[in-house]
Image (cartoon, rainbow, N blue to C red):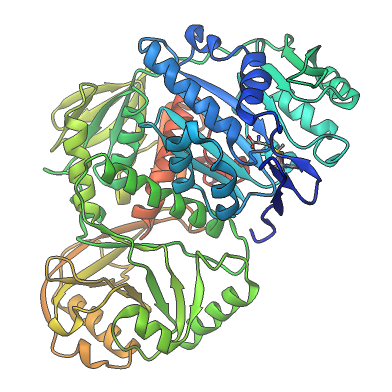
Length: 615
Ligand code: SAM
C-alpha cells in the first residue's frame, strides 16, 4: 500500500495545476469546466442520455482522477438531472475513477479553489478524500445517489480487478506522448471488456495510438472537433457485444437482526429495494451486536495480507458510513477518539515493531507512541509503549441497530418480523420457502446474516464456522474518567459513556451457552490489571453488568460474503468475528451491489477470497 506516491504538482501562471513529473496540465488553461462539459459530457451524450437510460444506475469509468474536476462537474450535472427529471428511471450515478498518483489533500484543496461555482461539491469531496492506500475507496454523496469509487493504483493493474459493465468512459490521463505507460493495449482491451453495445468513449486526445488502440479493442472511433484551440479529439462507441439484460431485484429477505443485517437493509433500501427483515429474537441487536460500546479500528499486518487490506479499506469506509447516517439523523453514540494499542507483552511488542518498521501504512492511519506519549494521548498514565490509530474510536452497535431499525420502519418498502425463527429453507420454483414458527414465508432473494447461526441451514452447513463465546463487562471507576481513547492490551477498555466503561472481552471456544458469568467479569478485570501492570486507576473498580454472545469466525479469519453455487438467489454474509461494527458497512455495500448488479466496491481478487464457495 505504501507503493503509492502523491503527485508532485505546481501551478502555472494561469493558476492551472501542472504535474511536475509529466510536464502536463490537469485541465486546460482555457477554463477546465468548459472543457470537461465539451469533451467528456457532451461527447458521451450527457446529460441527455440520463433521461432515457433504462437502468436505475448509470456507470462512468474515468482514467485519471487528478483533481476530480471531471467528477465534480458530472456530479453537478447529475444533480441537475435529478431535480429536473425526478421520475426518470436513472436514479444513481456511479463514477469509477482510477488514479496512480493521488494529489495530497493540501494540493487538492488548492487546485479546487478555482472552481468557485462548485464550491459546495468541492467541500464535500475534500471532506471524504481518502488516505493514499491502494484499492477502491467508495464515497457516497447526495443520499447515495452519487457514488464515487476512487481506485488508487495503476489503472492497468486495477481494471482487471473490476467486472461491472460501464455506460460511458472518460478517457483522460496525460497526453500519450508524456505518459506512454498508461496508454497500453491492455487499457483498451480492458475497457472493451467492460463495455456493451451502446457504451461510449470520449477523450481529449486524437493521437493515432489511442485511435488504433480503441479500434483494435472493438470500438468504432470518430475524430471530431476538439475543445477551444484544439483541432481534434476522439469519440468511440462499442457496437459489437450485446447488452446484458440484468434481472430486476424487487425485494430481498434478510434473516438476522444484528449489525450486518441492518447495514444490508440500509444499503438495499437506499437503492429502492424492498426489504423483509426476519429476526428470531424479540428485538434486534440481541446477540453479538448488543454491546454498549465497540471499538472500531483495523487489524493491520506488517505485510499486505488480504485481511489487512480488507480491514484498512473497510475501516475507512465504516467511518464515513457511520458519520453519514449520524448526519442523516440516526442518533447513536459514537466517538472517533483514537485508539491506543499498548505492547503489554513480548509478542505484541514484536508484532508492533515489525508493523512500524515496515512502514506499509501511512502515519495518519497508525503510528508508534512511547509510553509517555501514550499517557498523554490516553489521558491516564500507562507503562507501555504501543501504536496509535488516530482515526479509530468506538460506537454503540446496539444503539446504531435500534436507530437504523427506527429509520427503516419509516420506509414504505421495509417490514420486519420479530420472534420469527426460521427452521429450514427449501427451493420451490423461483423462490425460497422459509419454514418458520409463524408459518411459511416466500423469498426470491435471501440473505443469511444470522451471526453464529449462519451455518445452521442445509444450504450453508458447509461453512466451517467457529463459535467463540465472549463476555464484555461494564465497570464504574471514577479514577478512569479522564480516559480519552480506546485502550487495547490483550483486551480493551473504552472511554466512559453514560458513567460506565466497557472492558473485555473473554474468548471461550468451548461454551455452547451465551450466559453471563461472574468468573468472566473477574477474568476481564484481572487480565486488564495484569497486562497494564496494576495502574492505580484500575483498582477498586465496580462491575455493574455484562453482555455475552457468540462471535462467529472462519478458519482463515476472513468473512464470507456472496452467493452460493447451485443455490440461486441465496447469499451468505457473516463470519465477522469481533469486527462486525467495522466490517459490516463495506461488506453490506458489496452485497447490495452484488444483488443489484451494480459496480462492486472491492477488487475481484479480494472478493474471491470472501466467497462462500471457498470451502
Ligand atoms: N480527470 C482529471 C481531472 O478532472 O482533474 C484530470 C486527469 S490528469 C490530466 C491525468 C491523471 O491521470 C493524473 O492525475 C495522473 O496521475 C493520472 N494517471 C497517469 N497515469 C496513470 C496510470 N497509469 N494509472 C492511473 N492514473 C494515471
